[in-house]
Amino acid sequence: MNLELSEKYEPLFKRAYEDNEIDTFIITGGRFSAKSFTTSIAAGIFLRDFDYKILFTRYTMTAAKDSIIPEFLGGLEALKIADEFEVNIDRIKHKTGGEVVFKGMKTSSGNQTAALKSLKGFNCLIVDEAEEMPNQKDFEKIQLSIRHPDKPNISILILNPATKEHWIHNKYFDEKGIKGGFNGVKDNVCYIHTSYLDCLEHVPQNILNEFDRLKEKRPKEYNNVVLGGWLDKAEGVIFDNWTTGKFDEVLPFIYGSDWGFANDPSTLIKVAIDEKKKLLYVEEKLYGKGMNTDQLRDAFTAVCGKSVIIADNSELRLINELRRSGLNILPVHKKPGSIKSGINKMKNYNIVVCGNSPNLIKEFNQYCWVDKGTKEVPIDDWNHGIDPIRYALTRLCP
Image (cartoon, rainbow, N blue to C red; front, top):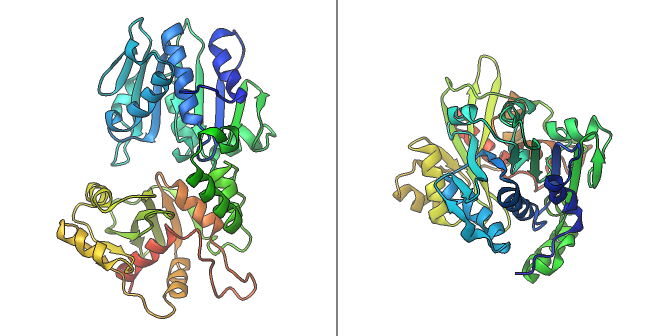
């Protein structure tokens, strides 16, 4: 395999060899920017040559052996050193003592894992998909684990930038006067930004064609998802009645779902209403592209159990198949004007966006009216998580 990496990553590789003041790396980029792959290569060198103790985490993480470890091993195999490591259920250890431990910050129920709280002795923290971490407080708690007396203590945040309201943008960009796309060092923080344009030789032609179409039809999404740019809040947004907070688990809840498949995401949103306080709680539980029927069934079953799911009625065959598998899923009944009616219902409440919902937050910042004056028709975009909320409301407040 050709291991030509972007020179923008040079400060990351040098950090282990050089005694400098950098203690945080902010690595941003879009799809096919090779940010996670390149970081895994750097981590492999840290483990082999410097006996680093690395805590590798995501806000939520499925079984490491099925997801993260194979990705990480790809970097070790590219270095041709994979056979020097011992692979276990949740960790990879080099024969000289360097070790990386894989742990999720939150369990599927949303509680912080006791195991993560108790981990000590690490000198390197890698947070993948850091945009999913909803608040600075959770990050700072994990940083307390990075306290090694004899090795450089560093944190590496890898992310696809979200909206500029995100705490990472506030802490590392706004407060330091740094603009998105910056490559360099400011106040002990090293910024590395790459995109697919930095590694074109490794991007398949069909993906390049997809990017070209997205650039032409949806340039804002292209800038965010593909180039890794931060999102500004759109003009004329439909919902300004939302904030972030915790889901009230005492309330009865159901789920709303939308179908995406190839180009758009399939989504699952948890929804509950507190009529007395006029609060609408919503939480992103699934937001994934390219999922087949079996994957959707497994994901829905793991999250929903026997709870009610109100789904987009455009895929009745799929809904019937999921019902036969035991899911309590029903098609939404759409009436003329149901989109505007659903929006009005949502505007009757103060919306609380809960938990790990980065894509839903993006949508609330981007979903706007086609005509900012008449406010009659919303754009047909940035609605893959919002539409399921409307569907769920047809059951919760018909």
